Amino acid sequence: MDSATHLVLIPSYNTGARLAQTVAAALAVWQPVWVVVDGSDDGSDAGLTDGPGLRVIRRARNGGKGAAVLAGLEAASAEGFSHVLVMDADGQHPADEIANFMEISEQNQEAMILGVPVFDASAPLVRVMGRRISNVLARWETGRNIGDALFGFRVYPLAALLAVMQERRDMRRYDFDTAAAVRLCWRGVPVINRAVPVRYFSKEEGGVSHFRYGRDNLRLAGMHLWLMAAALRRLL
Image 1 (cartoon, one colour):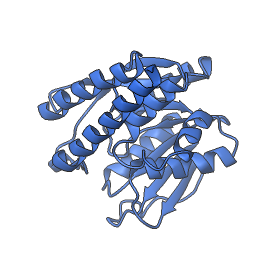
Image 2 (cartoon, rainbow, N blue to C red; image 1 turned 30 degrees about the horizontal axis):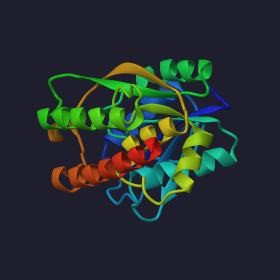
Image 3 (cartoon, one colour; image 1 turned 90 degrees about the vertical axis):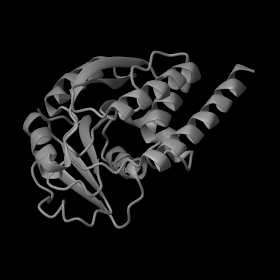
């Protein structure tokens, strides 16, 4: 389906062969699809070029998921788009749900549509347990029913998310997904949750993960401390 208002935005950093597969799957159900190559040096984007329904934005240096999303938002805003569906480049997110999410967004244009992952046996238990803690904290910080604070398959109202990101210097790396949901709630953006399946690929299947348990969990902990403090200030 072609759209002049809603686009699929895929940030990618060293995603390997899964990138081309993810882009092809997205293009099969929705256009336009934009890919932001965030300083990749593994050759994963070598076969990607601008073409029918596809635009490729290349950043010279890796800045993190949030930085890649911001680059896409700024370009999409300049082209007049109103909403973006952000999805990961590694094949974990279900491309066949894109049209459903876009339809919900078109009917609820003020809302953000948040994917809530339905895990199978491929999901690492430590990741599943860790996100439960983050979910509890995000719900406390907002008082809203955020189904999953970390899952990156979402449709955002572009103008609201762009405004949040442009006024801050954080939200540039792995903290992007949680901080985006919390801060948009604080701005009064409604939340619609929708369950979707998610699959984790092994290394043998071409799966790539840049999550580092020590570094990124510390980053998430620091982000939640800041968000909780900000939430308390909002109550006073």
